[in-house]
Amino acid sequence: VSTFGISLSPNPTTGPLTLHDVTPGTTYSLRTILGQEVSRGTLPSPTHTLSLAGLPAGTYVIILSAPDGRRTAARIVRQ
Image (cartoon, rainbow, N blue to C red; front, side):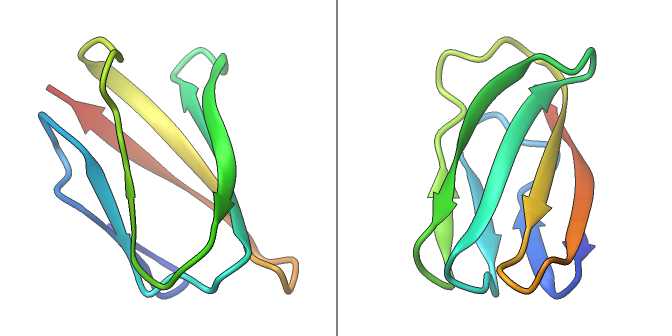
């Protein structure tokens, strides 16, 4: 999945999720498909790995907000 230049892999995943080509300072919110936030933070470097440990299999949405105000969302499937 590629969203405003950021790519997410692997997707679907059984382990961690890696974000590539991130603008440092981009914030994220990881939510269940029902909208419950399960993780949030700021991405400090161009490549960042998010642990999905402890999350049950299912569909999640990651909402990314770049420092310049751009926002996007992508669906993630955890197997």
